[in-house]
Image (cartoon, rainbow, N blue to C red):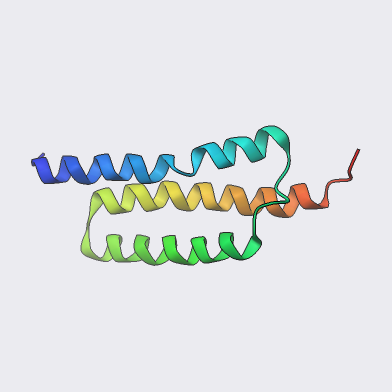
Length: 89
């Protein structure tokens, strides 16, 4: 592995982990009221576009990062839909 690919994977790890605390907090508290559905939808479009671009060009670090972020964004969307419908105690 060349050093620039290692830099790419390091960036992929950093990019991917930015969403982990938000997803964990939402899961733990079952609270997503402050999350904007539009932000999540835009994020899904953004990440899907970058993932397609990375796949097309065969850029593995970009594919890894955006696959993870896409999975986390889908979790946030699922939480937003399911937790918003949950009855309040």
